[in-house]
Image (cartoon, rainbow, N blue to C red; front, side, top):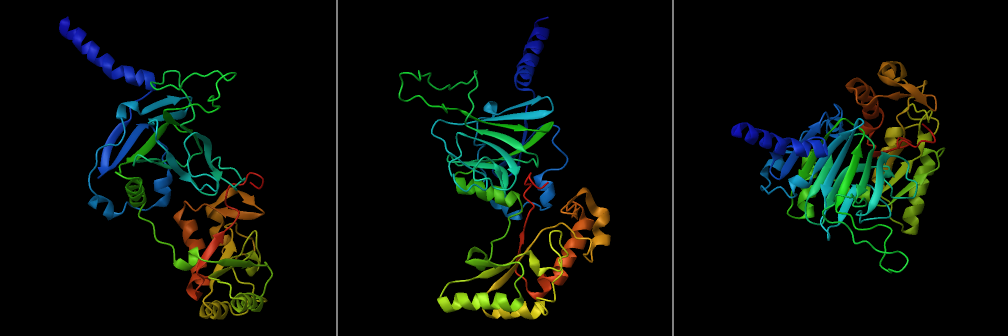
Length: 370
């Protein structure tokens, strides 16, 4: 009987955290200083699968580190088909990240929904490049591997069971009263029945970022001209007008590294053909070569919505979505067949003649269009 009570007590100690927080996160160190945590049933399709890039071998060469957080303070709960995640914060800790932000650097205390979207002049998570990754001033990073729209409370919510609650103040009399009181946790809500989370050790923030980048494949350094000065021209400019624009910059002593051609360089645009309009660019290869001699690269503006007049229309049609955008079919770029058809067209028409880059327009999930 005594042994039975001991066994039952041990079982309760194991089960109580699961009852309180929904499920226990299973952790595994997959690379030095990188831990993968799973709970529930994560989505089959996620950001790392979409990237289709293996972790860089350089990751294995980094030094080992201890797990940088208190694992017992990391909580997961599954509720109504959504995953709730909580991670601890220390009082003097600052957070950075969550993707592209134009107005803010410090993210602690902010509320965001990470949603690929046209930037609406507010750092609320709806931006061109939201990323469910943040790095702490204490030298660690956290990445939630989900392609869903994620609600983030980056040290903004206060739970009633908090171990470090904020001081209660009277707004009527206390000058230090705050609308956003101290919070000791990052909380996220992911619309999925499970999560896959990665924690990166430092010891410094740059080391955590390095591990994250290498896990994502390592990436590449942009060319210096890509970080330089640019100009874009009217959509109906001809090759000669573009050249004259570059000459004007040179005559005035203004730096110019690349010129962006608005989508009118194509025979049809929005939806697009991805084919040069020979009435205004009779010799695309010669034009690109002449601009390169002037030290000016060419960047093409386009979007992936395929015009019925495009030469690839029939070939790519079976690999497109159910709806059109501006009457153009939408390739499903998660499918290798769609990628091959579209990218082969880009290679033949643009890359082989020296075009240096693209500005992919109207793909930011702007709700007013889609």
